Length: 448
Image (tube, rainbow, N blue to C red; front, side, top):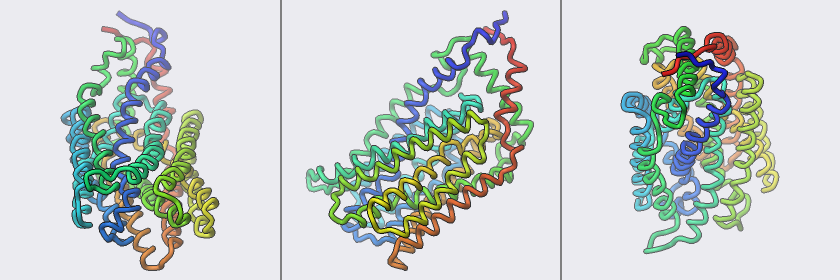
């Protein structure tokens, strides 16, 4: 029996998917980013308590990404084998336990060890989320969908900044300092959500009870068309993708972005504190939310316009390239208001880039290659999470100024922007191609 596609409301199907999946994944992402970056707020008290220098802090903050790098591809391969639901739950519970345990360390060395273990535990989570979304959403809806999901990165800072600093100012129970309670309290939600993941997530559209038979058939057909188009462009071997020049090109772009993003965000609380010495920890946390509010708006606006115009390179590359101007300007003022303005300007550009970036690899990676390809891009790129914070701390200790650090971060932002714009247009026009194919081939769909 045949059922015409006209009976399937395409917009309604996508809305169902977004309402069912994005809010939950969004919460998981907020929690992951919170446990990854809360060290930047803990540093307001922890560095003095453990006698940690700027260089050492940059090293400890960044070593997370070294561990992440080595374990990310194996983690994503395991996720592809055992299923996203089970593996994501495992990741959440293990990193939650490690975050709680960080509240009980007593030396800088122990803190470094916990950051390494956190990187191992969390490896594969972020690219796993991207992989999971590619199993559910057709390419022409990915820009906006990814932007909704990735606003969790900005919202995390909006939530984490005031929450972390409030905990430090108000929790000193049982002889434990506030920064210790920060890790203990913020590690618990990951454990709880890991258990919830086992009962809530569904691995693939074929198992989606929240979609009708016709809706599932339409969605599976759309994803099949795109998968076949991608396989014609890319060698379908999972491990052959490691030799793909396009993947390495995107890895370098992501590396530049991560250097700039983490180089700024890991040091933002201390930078704001240095500009306003009389500010309390809570005040620093509240002020730190301002750039991320604007970042959320930038991310969504740019991604929506990118989907509407069916254009990726300039929508992704220009915002982060322009953000470099904010980093340069930040070195020319010591006024807290102007400094906050330029930090906000820079954050808006960086987040404008991030909202649509993952539409680039998803435009040519098939399901078979996505597990390795996305993990490779993210793991190589995330080495910037070590380079950025460490470079800021090292240059600050050597020069006694934050200015040279900002110049370096600006260089990475320009690198990411220029390399994105230089991507050949023909390599990322899968959106338009699959849209036309789906219109031509999906006139009638079989139902079961």
